[in-house]
Image 1 (cartoon, rainbow, N blue to C red):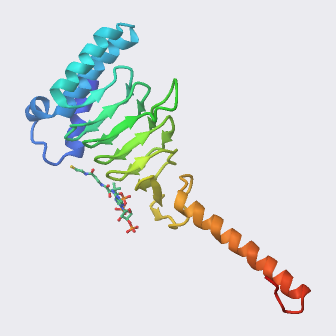
Image 2 (cartoon, rainbow, N blue to C red):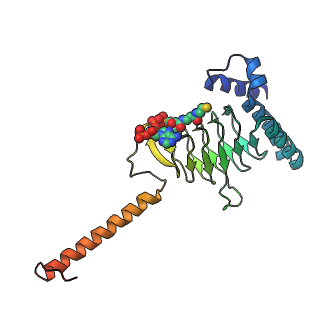
Length: 218
Ligand SMILES: CC(C)(COP(=O)(O)OP(=O)(O)OC[C@H]1O[C@@H](n2cnc3c(N)ncnc32)[C@H](O)[C@@H]1OP(=O)(O)O)[C@@H](O)C(=O)NCCC(=O)NCCS
């Protein structure tokens, strides 16, 4: 247990150049307070003391502005910077060495039952204000840009930005703006559809011209 607490503190030093001393981290970092209260609440939750777990979770929310459902499974060295407004849902799973900034929601879309919150891989950064909604996975080493809304699976080593979230970088290489990997873009889909229809009309027109000796009757 002490090893986990020590590694939670170390995560603050690894991610925040402003952190000065252990004393300061323990007494002034609300992210640390929220994670430690969550670890206690989760202990009660898995032993089926659901109400006690919820009370602890709500106490943590009241004190820190960070709401972590006691059922959420959180790995080692999670760092929540600033924290206010962070919401982590019940069936959310978070890997090791993840960084969350203020205003992040790891939530559901309201359309799924059972597992309805995301699974976050190891070493993922989710920037301020980003919303990750649904039961898909965000792959290891990925980054979600500030204020993005991510609604679909994110492959490992990707950077996703925008609403809806699009992959702009994969394995350190910029992704073609019209090729957003697994995340579909309704505007791009519409353009592709229109282009296909134009091609079909052009072909039909050419055939008509050939049939009528270069004359097209409309
Ligand atoms: C996404 C982020 C983590 C950078 O990741 P990265 O892999 O280094 O990506 P880059 O900076 O190379 O940006 C890639 C592209 O996405 C764009 N982009 C980056 N962040 C964006 C965002 N939040 N919204 C929209 N576009 C964004 C960049 O302009 C760039 O576009 P371009 O290819 O047309 O030049 C970073 O931009 C970000 O959002 N940081 C916020 C961190 C934070 O929350 N800080 C709060 C501290 S209090």
